[in-house]
Amino acid sequence: MTTTSERVSEVLTRQVSKVSQSVFDGSRLRVVLLVDVYDGAQQQFLEAYEQLCNQVASVPGHVSDQLCQSIENPSQWLITSEWESAPPFLAWVNSEEHVRMVEPLHSCVRDTRSLRFHIVRETGAAVDRSQHRRLQTSPRIGDGVIRHALTFTVRPGTEEKAAKILADYASPEARVDDTTRLCRTSLFMHGNRVVRAIEVRGDLLAALRHVAQQPEVRAVEEAINPYLEQDRDLNDQESARVFFTRAALPAVHHVTADGLSQGERYAQYYPVVSGCGMRLAELLAQHDEAAAEDPASPVLRSTVFQRDDVVVRLVDVRDAAGAEPLLQRPEHTAELKSLLDGEVVRMTLVTDRRSPDA
Image 1: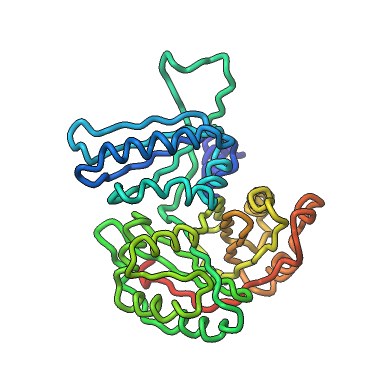
Image 2: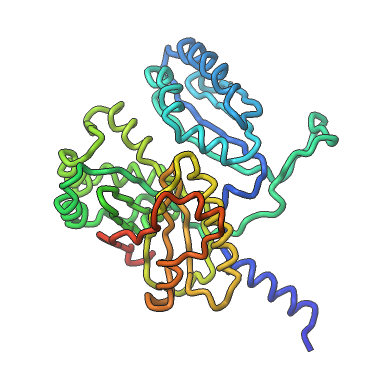
């Protein structure tokens, strides 16, 4: 006979085993931007912000924002904004419109740090109980790993040279500091598109800066420069910033059915009908949520990365043979098929590196 405590334990075990992150639960989003302004540039920053906030107010999904200045350090500012949900914010922040919109801020800002949160609970007299304010229903269970990707294209005809450069380099030091460590880097190519998926424990921004400073990585980045479709100068702070802003490929969904097994790693590239990238990513997320609940599924872990119409799905599977039908013939719904502008393809693995103690 199964006791109540055993049933509860079983439910909790299933919940913990399905480690998940997602931007698709429909709850409202709070964005926090920490800004370090150059000394003496506070008024310039305020004027640039006022111009920016008037433009942001018309962006679909934007609800409100606040600008705050530190009471201790006049150079420290805080911008908070609320959005109806994560997808409209991500669509805007990853757009060329956003790149152009925030350009006036760069001359007066030393550094920024962006944090995004789903709203789980709220209190206070200002909360209008008569309005339907969507909240995240329950906390998500994390595994301590932050997942991110970068994507860029090389000049057609240079793919083999680029792949060799990107594969032949010494791995950077995994330890960033006492709290941050590089866990894994997987690099894939399809045609002239490169996707580099990164897994980090700790502070993602600190890890990315750490990697960028490593001599072996700097050498690779300099060597690949002549083959890039988008010109960049890593010695020019603005040029490097624009390149990596456009190269960012955020993880919009992750689910883990089995956190212990290693499995084999694959990446799928989804050619998307123009303007349909976010919706396609959402459908893939729903598919992966269902697969994680199926004990017979070969998928151990799955991450969907999406920016504009670039959609990549990274999967770890139990074995290649068992995953072949899933990887080659995804269970597309009619809507999913309508969002595709071609066949789903498996990307070519260039290099996959794990930290020894990851």
